[in-house]
Length: 267
Image (cartoon, rainbow, N blue to C red; front, top):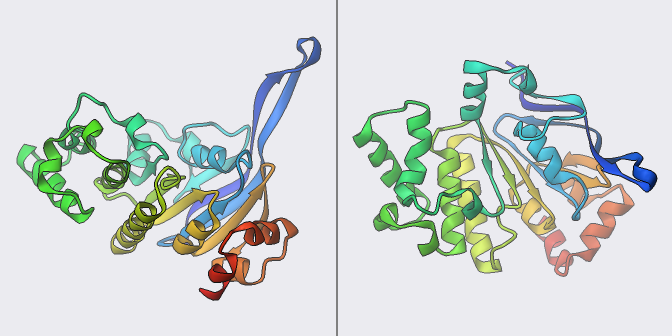
């Protein structure tokens, strides 16, 4: 069995656009990115808005098809999967998005939202599913009565806890998170990050965590990839990237963090 669970090989994504005289002009959002994520580890992808990090994550989730290159999970090209293999991939790799409420059905209770993945994959019966949901709500720090609440009755931090719960309820092998704490205030952000990292370690999950926030990336990542203009400009172990950055862009990002001296001392 390969040490790498996720392999991104020379992946590029070009979106069509129209220029002068309606001439097609390609916009390359991701340009030849190659990365790998070891089993049980977290790869943090950091970059400013427009760097291509979210597009790359969506390709790894099989939500956007690459223009070229491949994404492999357990050695399988995810774009060759069909039928039962594709369903197994959906169970194996789960997303966490920046705005979880946008993926919640506002008419459903939290219990219904969390039990739905179990129903789709035919896991357990009605009673065992409800018991699993109740136990998971407790694990993510929400009260028992949250099972009967609706999304509009929850705070932003509580919604993100539900998003984490939904991502892990199927016991996946990997969780791919796109800016999951960027909309939260600092104190809530820290709590959600701690929860994410605790659950990831407890379950032995492999993860990709995308953020524009260097402090966040440093907290949760084993490896770091720094993206700029669709390309990876620096890639390595977290301690190495933050402790001895090689690329000028990485140095600029670190220097731009208001408390970067405190961040460096924490290493």
